[in-house]
Image 1 (cartoon, rainbow, N blue to C red):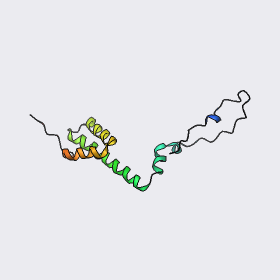
Image 2 (cartoon, helix red, strand yellow):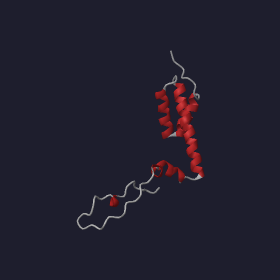
Image 3 (tube, one colour):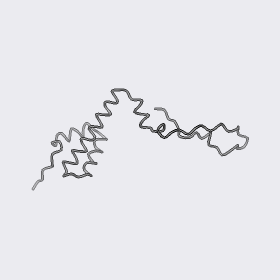
Image 4 (cartoon, rainbow, N blue to C red):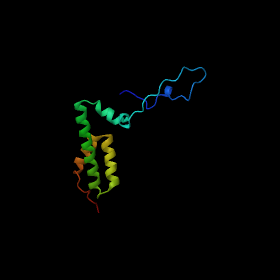
Amino acid sequence: MNYEPWINPTLQLPGPALGAAPRAPRSAARKLQDADPIRKAVSNLGPTQRIMLAVHGVILVAVAYHGYRRNKNSVPWGLGWAVGGLVCPTVTMAFALTQGYAKSQKQEG
């Protein structure tokens, strides 16, 4: 991944300073869509990497739904499971399947 700065510091100087060379012409401003790092990263992915990214996205949504439904429609629990799916999607999905996917937690007592 190549780093491309949003501004060029050599072109942003306020004026000639202490015998500096004449200023270079200002470059045109880049469009916001050109500065999107996620779009650039995804555009450089191969087909296998895109498939794995999609699989991990599906797993993330699935474990978030599991956490939401298992804990009586609790949004914080859904978000917690989503974080787990983001950090380690395969293990989190395995836990969700082991617990009985999207089934409510049984109350003891």
